[in-house]
Length: 82
Image (cartoon, rainbow, N blue to C red):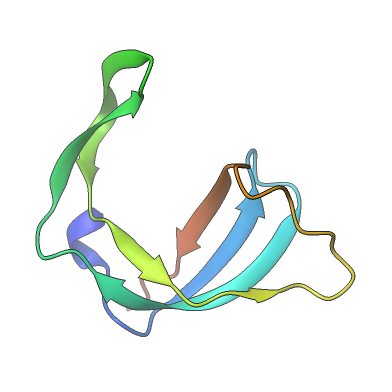
């Protein structure tokens, strides 16, 4: 859940769809509150879970993997742990 994200948690960054590992990192900053977000700028539907917690992470690229263009979407998976 969005409210469970904490500083220092491990983050895995993958290409959209989850098939190619792009890099790893740790959560370094978290927005002060959970907020509602839509799926995209051109699509006003609210996401299924509708809540996100904006967070920023450090980034170390995976060796041997070409970085995607700057505007390319990545999926960030935060390991919530016990």
